[in-house]
Length: 361
Image 1 (spheres, one colour):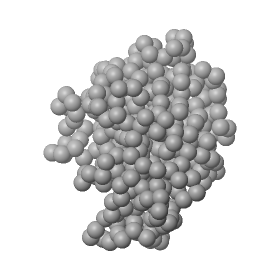
Image 2 (tube, helix red, strand yellow; image 1 turned 180 degrees about the vertical axis):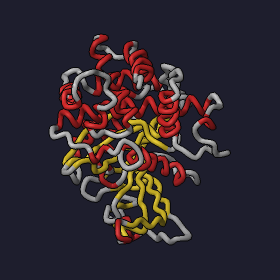
Image 3 (spheres, helix red, strand yellow; image 1 turned 120 degrees about the horizontal axis):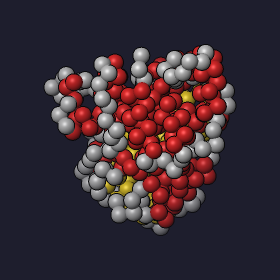
């Protein structure tokens, strides 16, 4: 079957944005299109969609060599495409989310992503040991993200308790970003200098009534002042129905308004994004790559394919073509699935594929 239309479309997008040679962009487009058509990241399956007359084993070795190439980096390959796509994103307020998920055995993926249409677009990422990394690792990841965000937009930074430590808040204040960071129930606070420190768990939160505190001092040992606290009832279970917590505590720099709790839901866009990478999409957890360099190379190519699929899906919605893929009266599929399914349909029917890369607001 002819794989050229998908590869040619990607090559046209890549060559105008990546600071690489035509040969390098051609190799990336070749492998990226194979990932899109394969639908998962098993190397032997991807190799079936890599054009060439050589044997399957030779194509697998070619894929592994490309994943280890020195020019394959987030800064040189992914971020130029991301900046191009974001030129159509004109929101005055960006919701940026940091999160972590288990990926391979002993390896977690920590990402900072842009909340977009109930999903997330990865901005920067890093692989960390299973169970998490040090505060310094996440601070470094945050600083890598800053150049990708326009200086004129307001940014609200979201994260759970793993990322709500004092150094993160101090760094966000230095950068000038607002934040909504979850805190553990044992975190101490006090309303004034004269008050003694109390844990957040002492706040009178019930299923019917939330609690708000303005301008309190958080962290009894390090005393970080000028914080607003929002506490509300939200039971959360671990696996096997074991209760993890009943009340959610949010430390924020935003004003305590009635819509603040709804604003905090933007953080959950990372969960379906991770599912798109894993069980509902690429099945990345099943890949066997062996080395950290190959894992990073694969994540870069997945991010390219994911970004392209989302851009295509958004373009179909914007131009009234969504029902070619998703026939429901109200959109049922994610932008990623709409774009991906449409690309596969165009390839099977040997129809043209436009070389577009734009995240419409």
